[in-house]
Image (cartoon, rainbow, N blue to C red; front, side, top):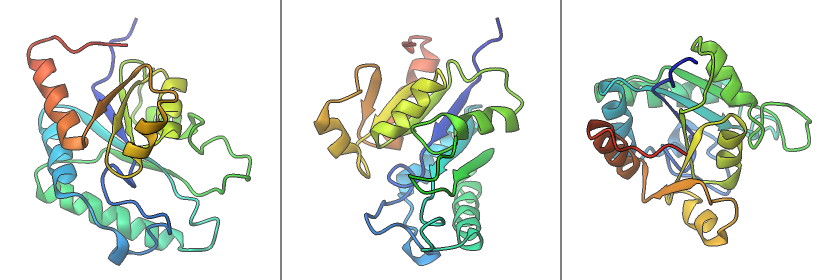
Length: 192
């Protein structure tokens, strides 16, 4: 049995940067949480591989193009690099909710792409960190451990109480990172 990868997969909007009900459509609208950038750097420095899995249906809806999305992701990567960290892979779904793709969360396609891009045999034991139920469902489908953050849509998701039985809940990505690195040091990290 292969050992569990030290991998944290992050949703983007609401976890790394502020979310918007009107979509994050430009570099100017991309507002990263400073504590999230630092948290990614800390995970990376502690030997964790960090990836992003993000639904970006704004492309299918015509709100922005792939070039704009690439610029937003380059900006996030530059901020993380400047903080001393690294994002190892970014997978995104450009499809709309009715396009019938296999990559849009809550389906596990994006996470499987990350697994394949990183040359992993399994995602079992990895973490999926998101602010919505569909993030957690994608993580569950890929056999990841799930963590919900209260940033973005996370508080609303928590209030529903639906589908959260196996999820750990944290105020933000920094709090998740504090917990993960702390329990890793003491070898007391519970696995679901």
